[in-house]
Image: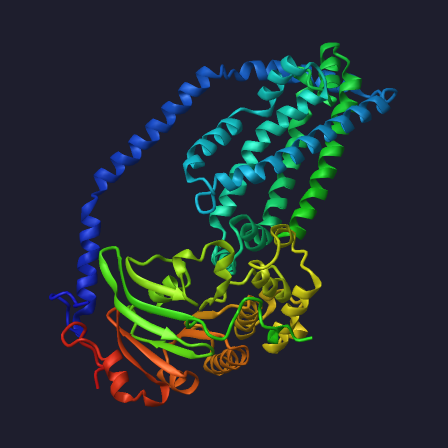
Length: 282
Length: 267
């Protein structure tokens, strides 16, 4: 490469740099910069003004509502523990829904991720269709899926399992595929030259490297789904959410208090365990 | 029992050379990277491939290994065109890479066993459940490269030189006709580089495996190779016994084209 013709001799190196700085400063004057800042701030303010009105944000109602909430909290003491066995059973149901749904989703996500990763897919023609399909699954929340499945397979936790499985399938497969696309394929290329087939090579050279990340991703989704599935009962898809809704409908705040306490304890404990496992994996 | 000395069924003494390249041309992105390249490697022969950066060494090796296709000419491994070596037949050509290309989270033994994938049933490969004979062969390969004690160590805990030894063991376990090595010592320090080349030469000599190995260092080519093939601008310009390779040949390969890239290296 030839140096630019106008390159300065050693003694005057600083002056060219100073001129360059001056040129940069002259490019955007102070006035233009202030105008731009003002326009940006106005746009942000307008955006929030529209959002506040659309969301009916009304601080006055919060002010009148808060004492009501405080009153219920006072009424809720002491919590009702006579139904604790039922509440614990329903909570276990919720955790079971999340566990079965997430596991099914993770297993379905493995082959889906393979087809959705540009570098490894055996059928490049299916790359975009598979990605679209996964995006669609991801775009529909488990809550919405559960609503549909309650209508299809009836009330109960199985509808919740299906709801969780379908949404998590799309979400986990996308993350798996991103990991696969970032994987270093040097070892894969080498294993291909030993005469191994495509799937053998993936199982031998790629899976060992990505499996810990996959397991960590699956655990993350398990945590997320345990939290998410506490509300699935509201649409009739089983678990503790059902009891939560019943108590609220009957304004039975002592029972409600117990349920929320149990949910908090279980979710926090499982989050901790899962987080600890994930740290061990990666 | 030494599995290395067992002749594989169907292999006879009189057959085509392990590698025969003739009249190969290849263009890549409009650039003529290989021009009428011809060379051959005999059984048990160690051929060093020399040439300046961009001379086409890596492209030629990738074509020989079946990782790239050629536009015209022929590349035959033991008399069979490389393009016809599909799937399992690819095991006839083992490849050693500059960056080792091992599965980092697997043990040295599992990495060497990958060399058996072209020989064993698919389910055994996928589940990594190899037969005793394959495991013994893999351990023997590790013993040959001096890493038997490291068999169960994960390869990401090994040094660069040790990792390249594992890669050589993998190539040996593959029981190929030809080993293709693309700058196998370029990412190693000079000490382990020399050891690796000595090892490659010894192991392949013992098993009668042909080696085509690209190198940057003329000295090592003279020290370890039987023959030196030189590439310049995609064409074979030198093909001499290693003992006959001299400074004149080196000049021919590495002298910069006048006026193209003026530099102080031209002395």
